[in-house]
Image (tube, rainbow, N blue to C red):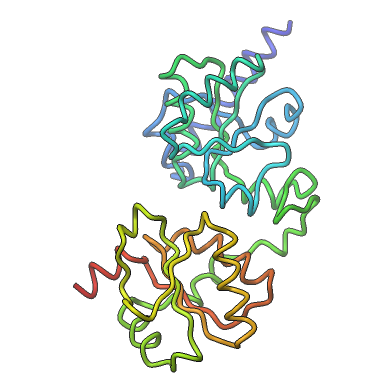
Length: 266
């Protein structure tokens, strides 16, 4: 009877997945058809019987995550070894997730794990934001749980802070030195030792929280406008939570980051 119910559930899951693909709601499913999936409601039911793995960066994980999840970034070179080490500690299904329906990290994490010989892995591809809005009790936002879904920053609020590279450069350079703080938050490999505002910018990788917070607090104390850029304009989304949490209001991000600068300015 148990096997019959399991087969029925699997058929329903496959039907739902096929419908979603037809509607274009989950574009990654067509590209990764071999990856078994977990639906949102099923993951909630099985939450105590699976191991949930956040495949995003540590910054994203620390900002918002599924309660009880562990963080193994797919971008890490040690990802296969870390997943195999996790498998040795449990026989439970391992379920990977990332940001949402157009984020492919959950699929890539599951595929990489399978290629490394790790079995019984799945992807929950609706993502953290759908989860957090539906199940605030089982979510963590900035270290607190349950969360208030209204505290999730909408993309519209992020877009308000973006300036195109040319406008960003003009605004940053025209603001008096004692009224601005220009921050390059790329990591050392992305930066390669060179910034765009030589002599007037500061560098604090998003991974160096102590150094980054020092500059943020200085900007707040001295009432300076922050001009911040990353590599592609995507990671600053997570920094915005810290800025808002510390009630820092005067800040702008460079649209599409350093890559946008190279494309538009050079």
